[in-house]
Each structure stands twice: as structure tokens, then as C-alpha cells.
Image 1 (tube, helix red, strand yellow):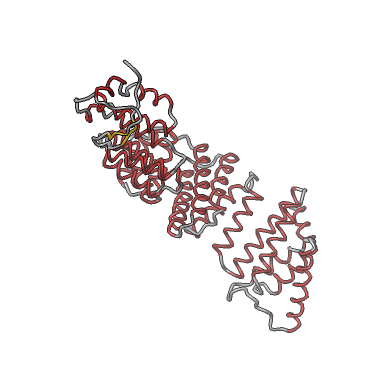
Image 2: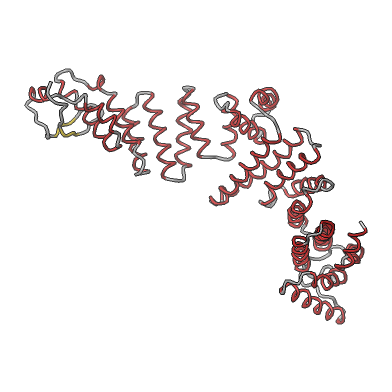
Length: 450
């Protein structure tokens, strides 16, 4: 402590600790010049000195003048505190001696406390203080608990206005606190995780209403990082969720924070086909609509043969898709859902939309070819094998456009034979309609003589 106090004297803050806290914030700190002409002149002089020192990179040389201003005109201007924070961050960051570094970092914290005391704006300033507190103290075993307490306070008073930079950082502080002190229960960790997640969700909803896609993507990354930290701190598997969280969710199925927690744990645990996962996923999606989640729910509901919900969610996925690839992928799934229920014409339409959405995606052509290949029994007239086999030429054409040589060969094997064409006086190269629901016009080809 002696070393720190000596250093405080060297950098001119000792008097500041006792005098500057005596003021109270009566007016906003913006150009509140002293009425005494001599004091005003002295302030102007010290302002020039410390700003010149800052500009030249002489941060240590700016401290005495800064102290005079904060001690004698603590409500002059917020710039004094902004500059003061910058000065002491630069000094602390450059200092190699651990004790001196700690003293400078403590001085930085005092600058933030003085700003709140004299100028207000607690939410904004405390958010900034928390970030620097984590920077300098979170890995200090004697200080990490106080850093965590500061973040707890920031989230308590800030609501959804927590700085974005403090979202993931809060979880990292929890992780460091647990690594150094091991003093948190799983419930205490989960409670903090829920606070962070709730703020992220609220920010994502706001960004969505303002059509700020870049902000949404940034928050998604933060959320993924927070989730990754959580699973390193808390051992939660699917049986844990079923035993401990499902009863709470059943009692309050609209609890978005709990739904988020269940959704994440069960996704990590690989039990997404459990009905509870779907119930939680619906709540999560309702609060923060997401393309990937809507698409995956459609797939799971389809597997469970709940086609009404599968149709609904894949339709949502189509509207939420942001890229041609996502749009095409959604239309393919929609087509598959229709094909499963033998709605071939409607399925083809979805596959065609996939092709239109993303010209590089050839899967739609292959899927249409599959529809044609499977339509022989429903389309055959049993009057002429040549006519009945026209659908295989249509299928071949689709596979050719998809670039699937294996399926092209399979379709070619079912082409009309030369003999079958001869029976109808047809010739290769002529165009003929397939009829049936397919209703394509194909150029006659044969599989050869038989």
C-alpha cells in the first residue's frame, strides 16, 4: 500500500481523492466556467497545459493540470473526465511495474466515480467503468469479485441499454471469477446468463425493427460466444433439462429466458427431436424470428408428420431468408414436404422457385426429375409403351440440367425402344407432349433396339 500511495503522490491524485468528491452534480457538466476571473484564467491555463501534453503523448505530464481542474472546477466539463480516463488508461496500459500499474488503474476507476458524482450520467459512465475494470482487475484474484459486482450493478441499472461490448465481457468475468474463486453456484451462473441473453434478445428485436442486419449478425456472434462460455461453466445435458427445467417451463410456457436456456441446452445435447425442444424453439422463434431456426423446426415437424406446422415454418423461413442460397434451400424443403404428400405439381412449383431464387443451385432440377421418374403408374395410359415412357425423357432432361450423370443413365434405361417408336410411326428427334400432370414437351430419344 505504501508503494501505491507514494505513486499517487507522484502522479498528483492524492488531493483529488479527498477534495473532488465534495462536489455534487447540480448542473450538467458542460462549459460551467468559474465566476471568479482569476479562477477562470487558471482553469484556461491548466486546460491548455494538459491538452498540449496529451497531444504530444506526455500523459504523465498532463496529470497535475488535470488534477487542478478536477479539484477546483469539478463540474466544468465532462471533457475533463473523458480526457482523464484516456490519460490514466494510457499510463496504466504502458506501466510495467505491477504495483504502479494497479495504482494507475485505481486512479482510472476514481476518474469514473468522480464523473458520476459531479456530472451524473451514471448508466453510460458505469458501463465504461465496467469495461476498464474488467481490463485491469478481472484476472486479479483479490479484485475479480468486485469486478463481477460492478457488472451486476451495470446490468441492474442499464436495462437493455448495456453497452454491446459488456455483453460477452460480463460472461467472461463470470468465467474468470469462477476459475479464480469457484464461489458461484450453477443457478447463480445461469441467472447471469439469463440477464445477458435477455438484453441480447431485446437488442436483436430493436435491430430487426430498424432493419439493421449488420447489428443483428454482430449480436448473434456475441450470443454464440456467451453460449459457448456457459457450457464450459455448467454441466447441463438433456436429462438435466427434462428434470430441472421442463417443470418450470410447463408452469410458465411464455418465459422467454427459460425457453432460450432450454433451447440452447437441448440443441447442444443433440435432443432436438424431443417435444420439449420444439415447444421451447417456438417461443424463441416467436420472440426473435430466425431463418435457420424456422427451417430446422420445419424439418423436425415434417419428421414427426406434423405437416401443418412444417408447412407454416418453412413458409416463414422463405420470408426470413436473406440470401439466394437460403431462399433456394427453403423452397427445396417446401417442395419435399409437398412431394411427401404426393402433391407433385405443387412440389414442382416450389422446386422451380428454388431454381429461380438461386441459379447456381441445381438441386431443383434433380428434384423435378425425381418427381417425373416416380410418376409412371399415375401417368400411364397403357395404350402405347412409347407414349407412356415419355416421362422418362422428361426426367432425363431435368437430370441433364442438374448435371447428374448417374440419374441420367437410370432415366435413359427406361426410354422407349426403337421398336416402340416404330409401332407409332414416331422418329427420334420429333417433339411430343408427355401429357398427364407433367405436361412437358420432349424430343424423342430411344434406349436402343430391343
